[in-house]
Image 1: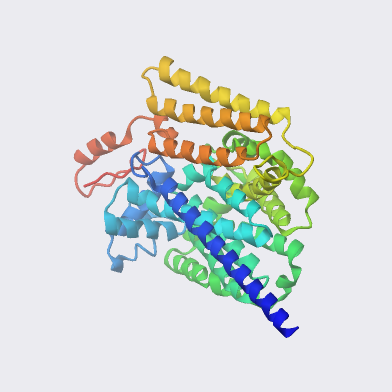
Image 2: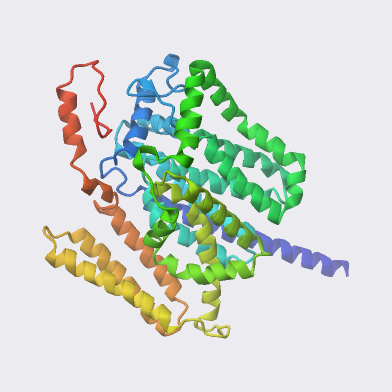
Length: 486
């Protein structure tokens, strides 16, 4: 009997070892795919006004200043105190400036790398809440091939880093359910969020975590480990805010905490306003084709609200969406932290569709789920792709061959997906994922992934003229911040 027990125990260890090895392979594969997609042609386009330019300029002034000047601790913008955001991302960009020079590539690289790292981190989060691996894989691939995640994550901004640190916080939170040592990681990740975008964003992310714990694992809220971890992780944040208060006094508190943070709740900053359903429309516009799986996925999450993945997706999505929708200031990149929650819902639904569809050598689960409506929706997307290809390839002046290629590939992908759905073939999921990845790769290789640049005149030639005819040492503030190489 003892020999049988030993054999069973040995078998379990072998299976667990193989399970961890498979997860390691998926993690490495997702990281490589994400790094490639997030870094190709990263410096091929100028920085976008005004958000990318501001971040890059603050980082440049940190890079240009000496350590003794303490500009790294008290950042400046055009020589004046910069109170808008804490300087974590600006430190990282300044570090890349010192290694590879001042250019668009080094300005965008820290955000791109952090957003790419968030993909395997998100896979680990999904593995914590999904017992089988399949929905975790699909959730990570949906997140990887979501247009807003790829595009916004590549920009020299703060939001890609925020999503990365938020996912890291959730991963540590989930693992702390079985190992209390991860509570320190929760505090560190929350501290990184606060040092990137301020304490108000940190309070919002902490609220999401606390509401999830209160629903899923309330015992953790009663243990001192979590709160000790939060205090230790937030200690550098308290030191930085104290240093600003000692240096600037009430001016810093009034500008940073009130004008640049709290005021965004009830006042639209720089006329960036919108209706309460602004972010719902953003999701509807930019999350195609994964948007088509959200209705069924939402129903699935509601029916399984006793499971951790559903609780996390519901709390994460609803609390964050409600918070940013009630704010008076509306900016597209504020919605970026929504997409991991939507990917969890989509991954769960795709796993069921995979099991219910036809596969070679596998008996599908009844009933067959692929209706004519699915065929029609993907057929409409295919038609849109083909029409766009025809317009930009033949009627647009000048012809835009890069857009023609992108839309042709997208139209071909949607056509094949519609045909596979008509045949009730579950392989439509892998074809859709692969087609989205290649389509996004083609978009990032083109000159259209920062499409806002087409709405303004070329910035860098104008900036070069201003630099050439401005005396050295004279202070000026350009209308559109940009990087000009000396």
